[in-house]
Image (cartoon, rainbow, N blue to C red; front, side):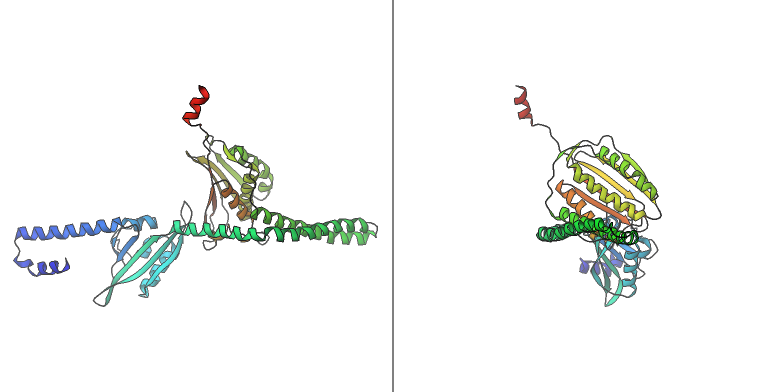
Length: 390
């Protein structure tokens, strides 16, 4: 085709009107085919000229980046991209005339974090850089599967250590606790001054024993198979009960509850104890994220034909993008006094219920957890229904 175009251009001055129209139509058809090919690609493609202005792009690029990309907007591409990290990367690579392939980025989106893979390559013609070719691939599904598999592997590896380690710790803790109680009784026989001082030290010891015991209990909960007892649960009633339970404590920390519970949410089959614990872990984390400045904690429910959705949002400090994918991993915590097992337990509870949990967070703006639980349809098959009525 290129050779044909070159020959045609050399003969252009000798062409009559019909031949010119035919030649122009051929060029138009060729460009239309090229546009169709670009728009058929699932990966994004952006072509820039030497001034870094878009001369060609496809629908996938706009869809993946979540912004309209007009051709020739009279400004460099990076000024059209809202994500600062992505814009700075493209700007730096182009200005330095580098070639960078398969760089990964995390972009905050309403449905949760989006993962993209970006390549920036120079457009070379006649041994000179004439522009830039940028390719974009949405790798969100692949990354989520990798993260999910890693979480499951971490839980499996913990299971192998659970019984031995937990019991080795619990037994000495129980013995220490008993001897602390005996010491308290014996110290009452001493002078009041000695008794008062000693009791303060014993109070600290008792607190640490309780803290260690809680860590062991959480550890066992996180790694042992859950013995779920499924029964009909009213999600909205469970949430109202939790709000009533935490209302005074959260108000004291400057946290205000806001709830919008969909009355059409049906009964679901669940273990209310474990589900309650999973929700409590998220509420506790939300409160910690808003201390000391306070904020709003919103709880919303809705449903579709197959699933119930519980959305818990806070207006706290948010979670950095580089650690967001780690929050469900055992022993990962950003809190000085955290065990790193709360969200691991929550994740496990959701999986035991054949559900899922998604998280969306922006630093300085807050975090939203979305718990997704299946609706169990119990309609009897028509054949069995017919037999029961005959």
